[in-house]
Amino acid sequence: MVELRALGDDALTVALDELPASLTARAEALRALGLFEEVVPGLSSLTVSFDPLRLPREEAMSRLSEALSRPAPTQGTDPRHHRLAIRYGGEAGPDLEAVAQTLRLSEDEVVARHGAATHKVALIGFMPGFAYLDGAGNLPAARLSRPRPRVAAGSVGLAGGRTGLYALQSPGGWPLIGRVSVPLWGADGPLLRAGDTVSFEAS
Amino acid sequence: MIEILSPGLQTSVQAEPRAGLRHQGLASGGPADPLSHALANALVGNPPGAPALEATLSGMALRFLADTAFALAGAPCEARLGETAVPDHETLQAQAGQVLTLSPPRLGCRTYLAIAGGLEGQTAFGSRSTDLRAGFGGHEGRALREGDRLATGPAAPLEARVTPEALRQPFLHRWTLRATLGPEWDRLSPESQGALFASGWTAGRDSDRTGVRLDGDTVTLAENAEMDSAATLPGTVQCPGGGAPILLLPDCGTTGGYPRAARVIRADRHLLGQIRPGDDVRLLEWSEEDAVRVLDEKTALLRGWLGTGFALR
Image (cartoon, rainbow over all chains, first blue to last red; front, side, top):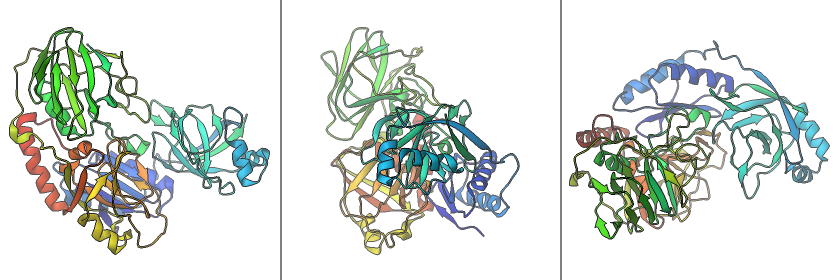
């Protein structure tokens, strides 16, 4: 029995201790019901919103409970592995040197550690297509004290043991260690989905 | 077509919000006060979500380059067409070459200028609203600048209308927002739980389309455990431990790691866009059931004037 909590009169949230790929699959299945305005996974939760004048709250709750009582769907949601060509440092990664210094490593060491890891997409959120990747736990860099007003699309940031990928140009507070060339955003939205894995290949 | 002479602090094209894309990190956007936006549009025969200008806090000035019907709603400000004072909440007619000047409003935060036929603007991810943070949609994804020219859509002849008094929002320096308890309400200390709905808060200086900071008592959490990032929605009251609560507005990010202590009810969210830095803000605890009742009543009242295509969200 899942515990639904209200987030206002027109949204419900539920804590779910499931892997990102599973949360993504559940979210897709919920969206396919055509009942909810938004279906947004968190790191360990799902939130749905709806118009309570069209979908009464009681019905929203029962439909959501019912969907969540079933095991997470697996169909059509196989996580994909992405190998992304990346340029580390220089103009593409202007903070690599500073990050290396704060971690007391050489730049080559930072690049080696980051490149050797298999990163997992934990969450797409905060900004359009922005992806939070787990897997850089051995590189606990800190966020910039002053965010940049403009970060190029494809920029790769590193903070708190996570990699952040900027799909679109935007302001950004993560120190930048490199940039990927493949577009992270296309006609169908973000390239990456929660649950996918990523490896970076220095070019 | 219109030409911007003086853009003011932040004037942007806003339209129907982006829908159903928050899971991709796309903010909902749209007008910060969608009710005033819709009222302005209704006066010029536009559908509620038609692109219109949202002017923030300061004045602005523009020139009409063609004969145009237009209307104003939202934060009340002195408006002049040429030398003549013009009222808000009425269909107005401008002739080619005339200059419209809006003075800074003394109450409220955002004034909407709708033009018959709507403003043309770039559609991005299903909406013509400007996403100022991400830089797309509306007019080149940015706030307007001096010299910008914006085309307007074709307009059918229309009869002059006046917004009924009952639908006009009163503007004061204080706002009372009904809000329900949020999923992480329990994370607040008992003192902060008490204070959230009992205190008078002051809207912070650096409030913008992403949120209004509530200055006053600092929030303390019952426990300091970090929370996993979870979905946020406009109207959410985020409570960072050791900091000020933040009322999220339509341009807020889609996820956050701060406790979601409360959420402004759907029927009251249009008020958020009118909270001005320095205004007094109070939160009134409300139940979800009562919130839906209020939404039902308010929507029925507004649809009588705005049509069935209008919805509060």
